[in-house]
Image 1 (spheres, rainbow, N blue to C red):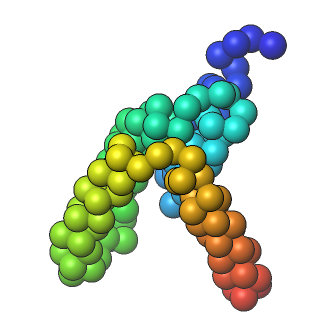
Image 2 (cartoon, helix red, strand yellow):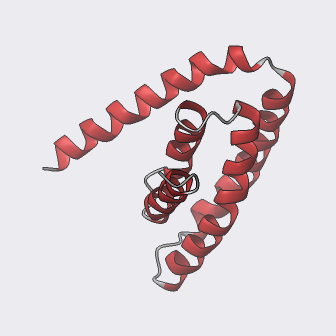
Length: 122
């Protein structure tokens, strides 16, 4: 198989999921670390670079279509930024092996929550 095909398909698929708000960046992180052999910190950096344009494009279209609640955005911006800074500091100071378990638990919890919410809607 062509060496670039799997990373390309992973980026394409997770980009589509990110634009739908499904958490494609999280899936990209899992794909890079488990299947592409990328180190956890390098995968986090790539994931952040991947997230910036997809978030910007999604934000533009959500605002254009009237789906952006400015009051909620104002209330969430400061705590969200502070939590991001704390998470970034933790990611570079804490041993990677300590981060794997909590991240795995987070992924399982997120997946179960999505499945249960989809089940309730149908």
